[in-house]
Amino acid sequence: PLHDDELKAEMQGELKADRSTRAEEEFELEPSGEDQPEASRAPDEAMHGGTPPGMSDDDVELRSDLARHLGPGLYPTDRDGVLD
Image (cartoon, rainbow, N blue to C red; front, side):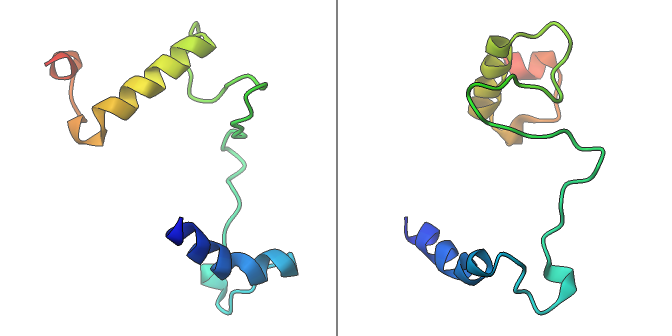
């Protein structure tokens, strides 16, 4: 919560001005590239993006939960490495 309050205080001016308040252009936030999929975490919208054909929404959620529990330190590996 303390970190959230600090970030809120830092962003207050930019949020009220509805424009960037950065002095250097190189520190400006950049929009997503045109080739990037639109991201949405709304619960009533369908998930899309890097999902292989044939995966249901439940399969995507299960894959995400599994990846969260395995952590990034395991990769790169193969099937046997994951099972071990």
